[in-house]
Image (cartoon, rainbow, N blue to C red; front, side):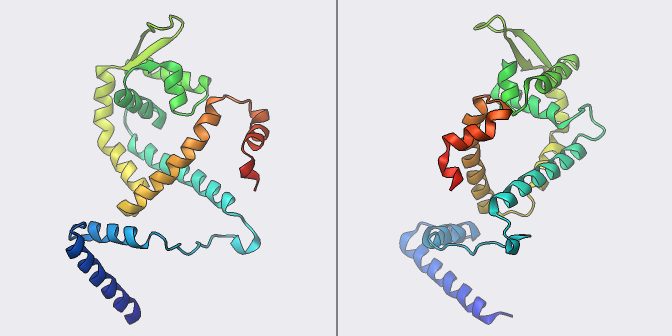
Length: 222
């Protein structure tokens, strides 16, 4: 047993107890203790993690890209399991339905862009949902050239029938992360989304995309 670590932990708990009594700020549980550590030790910089190839010059950007791609594949695998032997053909089917349930009716392109798909692929999904009678479409009041789609009662029914497994898959994807770690991951991913969404919305041709981003965000080249 590491007795130095044990003594340090006991000392930290004593500081937490004293601060809790004096300030009345923290709850007397693990959540209160975690918040105390965040408030009083947030200036401490954690040790830089190791990664495969680091000693050979592999940069953090390469690691982040690889991990994001791998996590996407892991998540897709669990999603396939969640819809196994169900009425859904792909995970995109239920993701589109969830978007319509949560955010309400919207025009086709809004739904497609919300899911970061190109138009042909997104239209395939929407047409499949229409064929299944899980969504319906009407003319837009603002633009008669556009169609507004919404989830039907049948779409709500098939979605609800599968939601327990979908929630289970979502829970498994987050693994053994603690709640504070999940909150920090959400914050970082939202920061990345905030950076990339305006670029995506410009619909820059793929032939010019890298050059355009590099020219407009010079800090990325440092």
